[in-house]
Amino acid sequence: MITPSPTQLQPEVWQKELAQAVSDPAELLKILELPPDLLESVRRAARSFPLRVTHHYLSLIRHADPADPLLRQILPLDAENHFVKGFTTDPVGDHAAALGAGILHKYAGRALLITTGACAIHCRYCFRRHYPYGQDNAVRHWDSMLQTLRTRPQINEVILSGGDPLSLSDQRLAQLVLDLEQIQHLKRLRIHTRLPLALPSRITSNLLKTLSDSPLHCSIVLHCNHPNELAEQLRIPLNRLRQGSITLLNQAVLLRGVNDSLDTQVSLSERLFEFGVLPYYLHLLDPVAGAAHFAVPDELPAQIALGLENALPGYLVPKIVREIPGTASKTPLHRWSNPHSGATSCGATD
Ligand SMILES: *Cc1c(COP(=O)(O)O)cnc(C)c1O
Ligand code: SF4
Image (cartoon, rainbow, N blue to C red; front, side):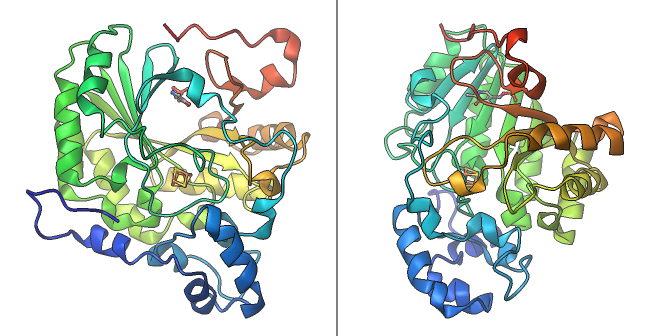
């Protein structure tokens, strides 16, 4: 739940929609006309990581189809409770990269802030489902986080991540951006978000103004996994962001039963471009406990890479990467499939 800040008495449209997000498994099954005998297993799986989905996102899901690629991303399943070797609660070494509460510094020049644990939808494969957001978010420890950034001139880009940073109010975000602008060595600001896909109304005039007026170069990295997530309602808001000189990129995760075919990946890249967004990364699933049923066969990433290169112009081919703890960047496909070319060890922690 969003608690309005004192200066904001009336919740905005997107905040009302967010407050109406569906978290009751029975309601979900009813809206989507899914078999009622699913109820017990959905309830069980939702106990450790609650169900959460907006009505907008639900409107993009086919009814009575348990295999719908958007449904699979938000539907709690019994498979989440199966223990699978190698799938852990800190798969990407975040705890080791923490500079302080809610701030991760893994890569040269870039610091990632966990701004909030809140999200508009709960994606079942999420690698942050086990992250201790309550104690460890940068907004709660904002002043000490700013101090940490001030004393590290080598950091020139700040990434607002989460949870979802756009679940913060416009007022709160404007204040965060203003504070970051005071730090001389920061040049770029990036927002990693899935929220516009769950709530197109989130792209408000105030948000647009905060980002386009900022002296920091701003980019938004959307997290869209499937072309069906790019609803018509997003066309105009994304266009306004671009007109405000905000760079729009996308990162997706390769997920079994969601986007694990070449056709889907080609359509995703093409539809992103139609909406003014360039594909940036296609991530391999992080081996997070509870998400093993989304893993794809080992040979698939290379097949998809080749297929995309053959089907699309270079600028519509996302870089296929995975996260290997202790390395200096995301590791591109050619490096992990050919280990002798050597992933370098991390140079960013200091
Ligand atoms: C992925 C990630 C980044 C961003 O990496 P880019 O290659 O710049 O997109 C930064 N910090 C952390 C901790 C990350 O996991
Ligand atoms: S952090 Fe992103 S991927 Fe994870 S649950 Fe939230 S919106 Fe989904």
